[in-house]
Amino acid sequence: MGIDPAVRTVCCLGASLTAGSVSANYVEMLEQRPALAGVRFINHGVNGDLAWNGLQRLDRLIADQPDAVTILIGTNDVNATLSERNRLRYVEFNRLPVTHPDLAWYEQNLRAIIGRLQGETHARLAILSLALIGEDLEHEANQRLELYNAAIRQIAAETRIDYLPFHERMLAYLHEHEAERASLPPRLAYRDGLINTGNATALHHMGLSWDEIAHRNGLQLLTDGLHLNSIAAAMIADLIEGWLLRL
Image 1 (cartoon, rainbow, N blue to C red):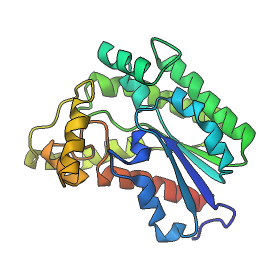
Image 2 (cartoon, rainbow, N blue to C red; image 1 turned 60 degrees about the horizontal axis):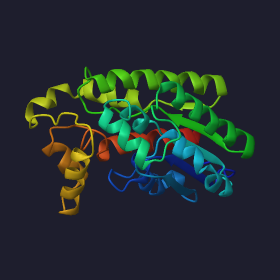
Image 3 (cartoon, one colour; image 1 turned 180 degrees about the horizontal axis):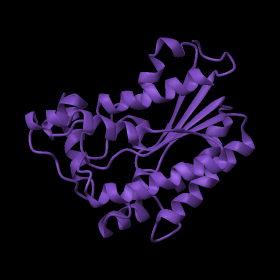
């Protein structure tokens, strides 16, 4: 199976998981896939973005005249609801037009993103479910995340765009590799703010790989509770590659 010759430019819209500067880079992985040779991938990921921020910079993406667009955005929308400290940081740093970002506002922005892409490009669209926030599946963060992923599935169905089950792949992996937890260090707990991410980024700049940082933090798919090691990033690359080959 080969790539459709009509698919030559693929834009990847997202936040830090897509930008790949503080996370294993799935866009770079896609660029190295032999089956996707000849496809130009354009990385439209910006660290810290909420869906509203992604909506504000769609002009640049649309100007690239993509044949396909992938959307992976919303982790920061969830994270903004998990503590007052997070809410204030996102409102100020991201210059949000609302003071209390919530699920309804996320849905509004996601629908607006899809609406613009459907109305102003000829691109095929795919949206990915959101990554885990930490690997404690009982934590409030992951309980709330389920509501956002349910909204993504519903919006994908209503707008008739393709849905790629990244979150579901992560859950399946953790269940299948549950026995390996016994050999890992104590698992890093979720913390609001940027402390965990700052520590992981510092270690990476010191020469540790994202996978080594994940292991050091007792995590199997995440490095700092928010960002991806190479196993999780490869899951996204697999999902997008499979989708492009099916087009």
